[in-house]
Amino acid sequence: MKVIATTNAPGAIGPYSQGFVVNGFIYTSGQIPVDPATGAVPEGIAAQAEQSCKNVGAILEAAGSGFEKVFKTTCFLADMGDFAAFNEVYAKYFISKPARSCVAVKTLPKGVLCEIEAIAEA
Image (cartoon, rainbow, N blue to C red; front, top):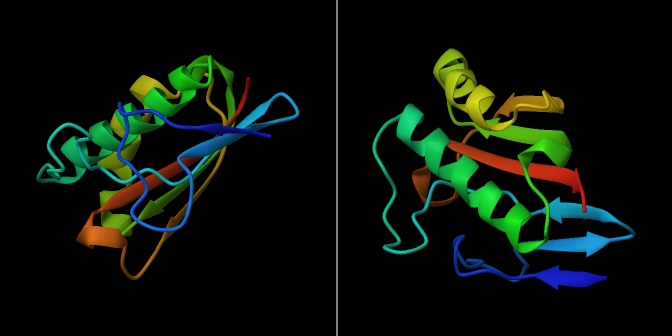
């Protein structure tokens, strides 16, 4: 197992890693829309989805992979009413159209609107 760590994605806010490479696969932790440079969270679902995607991308890149190698994601939304707007941003990044689960949750860390985790080929 190899731990993935990059300053281009937010650091863990708890006892976990940004991701792992195991047996040729990359497993990312859920990425919320925190700007790794400033710690700020953008306003609105579109901007938050964009930042969450960028954070996943930074972890994939640090592991030597990219969005085109993602085959499974799990997405968490604070409000399923944001589903269409979230999908519009998500589709720009996850071009391989990976298998996906998308669920509404009661709350997310820091009160954000979305979180994305991914599994990819290394």
